[in-house]
View (cartoon, rainbow, N blue to C red):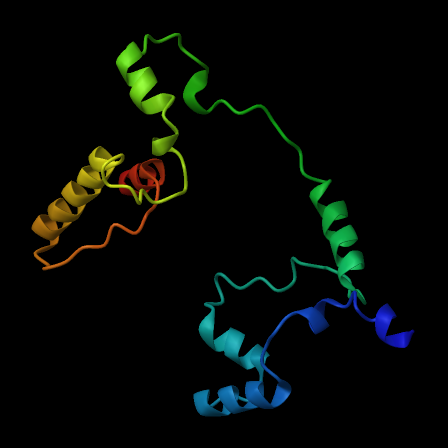
Length: 155
């Protein structure tokens, strides 16, 4: 019965380095503790150890309860991003072929070339353009959906 009561412990369900492995890694870095590693790695202007006052908890459920109580202190305000909706006309061909076509917003890679030739050609054109821009021989088109790729390209 004792084993069953310990199954909710977060640490028992997740992998991580043992104390010996941590000490070995610290030794190879020439450090004696994790606190020393943090102070050596993170600039003092960024490091703020006093602001988080999270109490120690004994299991994952208590941790989630504590984090939920912290999250409930947030205030959600109205977003003015975009300054509202404007009634714009979307041509039916764009609406039908792009906005209403799940091939543009699904997470799946097109495997049937005869069905997804346009999408595959767009990915090929993207790779060719990246090769031209970068001067490299190869380019990866690893993003599976074009909306994510477009958002990443614009940032």
